[in-house]
Image (cartoon, rainbow, N blue to C red; front, side):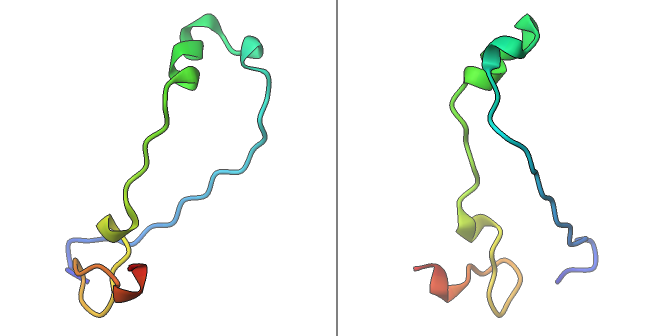
Length: 56
């Protein structure tokens, strides 16, 4: 891993609630489509930056 990279872990725990309970300003963001990074963008194997071969 390069010296200028710091490994981190994040975890979100929660439950689905009624969006009507959100403040009006947050409702559009909550209703927007979700996007996620593809696994090869951050799951590496053998060498940092090289996608793990088991990802397919």
